[in-house]
View 1: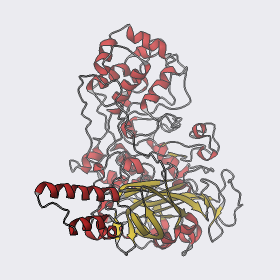
View 2 (view 1 turned 180 degrees about the vertical axis):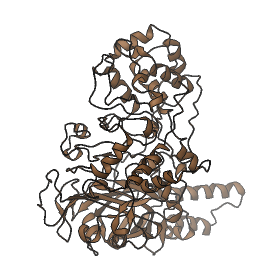
View 3 (view 1 turned 60 degrees about the vertical axis):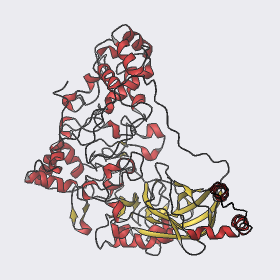
View 4 (view 1 turned 30 degrees about the vertical axis):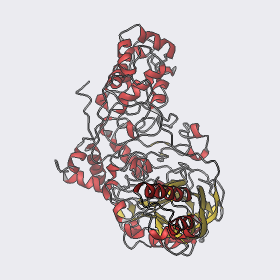
Length: 627
């Protein structure tokens, strides 16, 4: 992030002592300056050059490490205790920082206007970098945990894909309610009379969830840290963020006594305690000068871009964040057309009997209606077919997130023995014997067909599949209105369940929030006490990820039955029943579910019906008619 500061005259006063101004003054006093225009220009140019050399801008990197009582955070570990003796774990640490500044030796502040950083422990985001910072001596660093009102209520659809305030990136925006979560802390906890093991036993009734979400304009909290700092070239400041202080000092919080959740409503005592505790939770570990640091961003060049191509117009919904489209595979009409042809071509399978579209039917929200996917040779896989719309906003693919790009994802089912069972060598040969060489020439500038180009073409087509014109969207635009039942369902969907604060919603928005109605996270939603399919843990190797799967979008959910990763629920009514009476506790249950009563959130028959009615307003199926 480049910081452009105003260089006020006072800043240059210190250079008089450095000798550079003395040289200039001697030149002036000795009348060495030429009165002729050309001579004046020469001397001024030399002076400016001397100034430029003496005031090279610096780069400041701030790195923040989450700690607990001075020790490195161990996520999902039941080794921590509140002052009330409650054993707890921490599974999520995500927060926004803004309005950074440095205090000069004279007491004035160098402000980094509109500076924002997003930190997230799970995503390994722990630092922010500022370039073009005036070099000099400073004595303090400050920033806010949270945002000012202008940033907090800005139009989120305008933020670039890699901007820290892009909701699709940080997962901290409250969408229709407006504003951001400034600090999200989540985990599981045991009552003080429960066993204090580092790992809980499964299905223990004393295992609950906690979720502290600090938000609202008034709760943005200023942090000021005294630290002598000499900024020259590349400087790094390392900070510690102690979460034990956040929960205990000076205000001690007890999950049992004070509550296990907060959404920072007006007058919420937990939010007030967090605001009081935050200033003492940060400390400077040390500052150091970096040598030979090279952290400039690299931008990949487009792959196989032909001389002549037609850009594809990727249209955005006004409420959607800007997606992070691949820079090395720019969308062109030629590549999208080729990818679509490949998607609907049965030659992609070993026996020419199955295309991608046979398992991803447009009229079923790009799913197949089966409990688990059926391959070209009749075998069934272990998991349900996933829908394929709005993939431009996803970061990981498959139920367990093992693929990090669409080009990686698309080649796996082609080769999988229980899916299409096609070798890439055979596929390339089959396509080369047909009409595809001309299409590949238009898309890539050469008739050569390769597995990489097949993947790039399929990626291009899949990125264009969007769902953003459901009844819900038309209601937001003022073109339609909800029925009374749908409106009640929306209220339930977007309201937390927190009886202590008088809130009795269905709490769906925590996992299915924003205009995409999903999150980038993986979660255990209480389907099982033990796991025959370990889900995300098969990829990460972490026991703390056992039973976690990708959180799917609820858009078009009325079309994508059956539900869950294994297709166990046939109807939306069964899904709602699961979250109200069928929730099963385990060691990795999502904290936003674990904080609720055993079995789930109690809803009346009428409220369940209203919730289903609202979910049906998310149906938007433009593809069935066009294919």
